Amino acid sequence: MTLPPSVSPRVVVLIDDDESVRRALGRRLRAAGHVVEAFASPLEFLERRAQFDVGAIVTDLRMPGMSGLELQAVLAAQQCDIPIVFISGHGDVATGVAAMRAGAVHFLSKPFTDVALLATLDEALAVAVERAAAHRTHDAIGRAFASLTPREKDVFWLVTDGLMNKVVADRLGIAEKTIKIHRARVMAKMGVRRLADLVRIAQTLDASDPAARPRFTPP
Image (cartoon, rainbow, N blue to C red):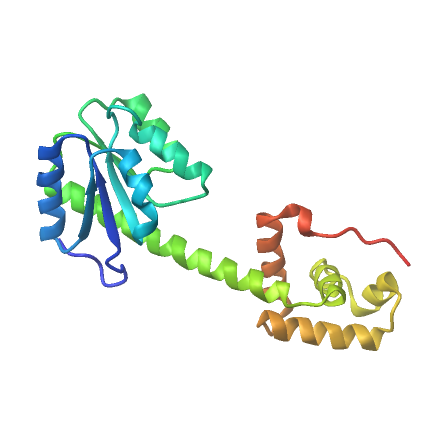
C-alpha cells in the first residue's frame, strides 16, 4: 500500500521498547514508502522531536517509564496535535476508548495485519494534512487581523456582529462615511469580498480566543 497522492511523505515516528518489533514494523512501513524514525521510548522521541517534520506517531501503549498514553498527554499539554496510532498486545476496550477520546486516530491490538496497519497509518497521515492546512489558515487569519489598525478592529467586530454602518458610526462616534472607508479597508486586509466571509473569520477568532472580542459602549 502506498501513500494517497494528497498525503505528503512526512516522517512516521515508530515508538516501541521491543527492538524486534521496531525492526519488523519499520521494515513494513518503509516497504510501503514511508519515511520512518524509530525510538525505544517516548522520552527518546521527545528529546529529538524538533528534528523531524512528524506526520504521525505509531506507538506501543505499555512501555517501561513513560507509556503511550502519557506521551499523548504530554503532547496535548504542548498543544501538539500529531495524529497517534496506538498498538498494544495488552489493550482492552476501556484503554482503547480512553486513547480515542484523548485524540488517538486508531487503536490496533497485536497481532494485526499489514493491511490494517497501513490503512490506519494512511488515515492518520491524512488527518495530519488536514490539521496542517487548518493551522496555516488560522495563522494567515491571525496575521491579517494583526495588520488592522485599532479603529479597523473596532469596525471589524461591530460589522461582523451584524450592525449597519450607521449604527457602527453611532457606536464609535464617527461619521458614517468614515465607517465605510474603514470597512472597505478591513475587507481588503482580511482578503474577503463578502460580509459572510468576514463573519466566518470572526467566528474563527472567537473560537480561538473568546476574550479578544472587545465590549463597546455608546460614546
